[in-house]
Amino acid sequence: MNKISAMTTGGAMLGRVRAALYEYTQVGISPSEIESRARKLIKAEGAELSFTKVPGYSWATCINLNDGVVHGIPTSTTPLKSGDLVTVDVGVYYKGYHTDAAFTKVVGTASPAQIRFLKAGMEGLKNAISAVKPGNYIGDISAAMDTTVKKYGYSCTKELTGHGVGRELHEEPMISNVIVSPKEKTPLIQVGSTLAIEIIYVEGKPSLVMEDDNWTISTKDGKMAAVHEETVVVTDDGCSILTTPTLFQIT
Image (tube, rainbow, N blue to C red; front, side):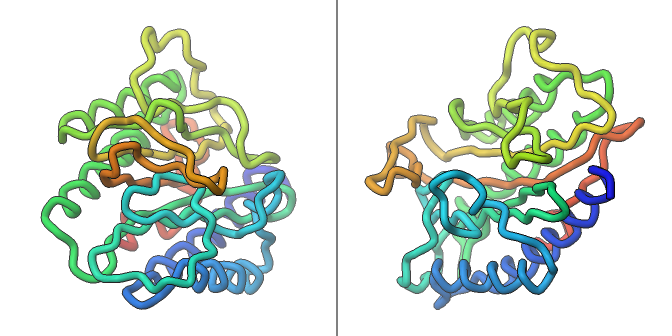
């Protein structure tokens, strides 16, 4: 099985896993229960856990709450409460290739501020994916995310990025969430490339802190953070989202 075939199948597996986790992530469910469900779902698909292949990481998911940005260890047994903003990042490994996806949602009742915040990120992700086409630069993807999020008054993170994905979970090119100028100094987008388009953004200032577990990264000012992510393959006339159903279909 070649790369694109394997990642197309793996992406569909991951899409189903993410959709199931999206529905499962509700008030009263704990991060550790989401992690357990993810492991069972990935095994049932006939795939392997992607994230456990990262040196030092032992879990199928990264789960962050409210001001948590990325890499949250999913060990908490505290049930989610109404109004929690929850990010679940998950990957599968199938036939030698990784795919990567994430969602952020509010469990229970969302505030108007939370609804607007999530809308900004989803719009930014759509615009970023629209910029994925041969002849464009990786910097065009970055500009689409940054411009959209700034329009709403929020900030993309500078240190955290999207990335290429394939044999390794994290490959070149790194895809900045902020405008890179001149964009011509960023890589050209090539047909057949597989990319994890990942918008990582915060409500307030883009200053981050590492928590004591040496994995979880949170906002320094304690304001909201979110991540929306799809794995795509670059085609002759644009790109195809491999992680189906997509976020646009499950929200």
